Image 1 (cartoon, rainbow, N blue to C red):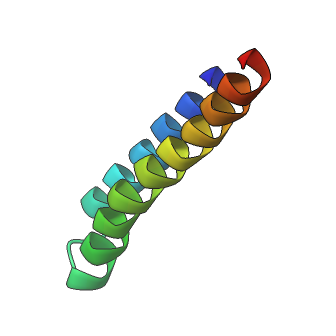
Image 2 (image 1 turned 180 degrees about the horizontal axis):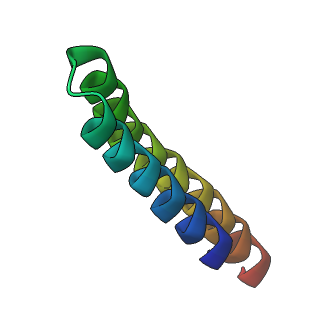
Length: 58
């Protein structure tokens, strides 16, 4: 959980730097996609782990 959060923060900072460096649409689109995709991936991973734990508890 902590490592995935660190990755998320890392991607977030990279995307913000991209926005600051290049104010063209491509960089903005990439950063927006990262901001949408990365948290979704983190949620999916966390949900899979939680579902595995629930199965073992039953």
